[in-house]
Length: 267
Image (cartoon, rainbow, N blue to C red; front, side, top):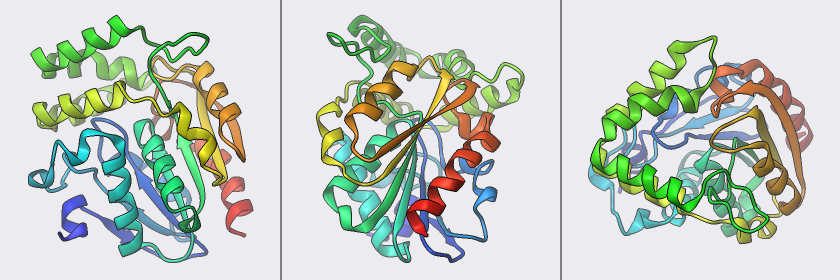
């Protein structure tokens, strides 16, 4: 399998480390275009589309391989092997943050650090853990995705994006959702929203920066607090922002938090 073609990998530049950018559900690598310029020219940059998203090879989508986030983590390790130079800093948004977590557990020697943008190890409320959703909420979401994916995408994208002062970002996210294959998107949503990686957090010793928005309907602040407490060698930075995509709606604030962290972990 040609990894570059499979994941539509783009790689350029050089520096003390490789920044490996991974997008969240329903998105593609173009969503990083607001944040990447802050680091372009100072690091090697690698961005890609998850299989089934963007301009990846959709024919490579295997429901068995991608029946859990571990399949996506295997892809990350293959991409890092093929395109990274020097230590890798994985920068993942939303569900991709957990993909990166699994990759750092598999091959900790490869990663200098990980940056988790709006992560959630588990979306379901369970006991004292507040993930943001009840089981019925997730079941309704997944059923709506299966019955009327485009309708769900158009209605929910602006809510997920937030950024009330920039409605064009919600429209962009909706368009991104709608470019996806509905069957693949529904399967990926099920894998995403039913995943529970809380038990994996303590097993990643890779230094981590967690970026948590102050108002996020997908990953509320309680999730960021939990992830920080459970994840060794982690830092938590709050981004004053409404929405789940601060790398798009608050890129300057994200860059201001990530920059010092990168200098610390890469020298």
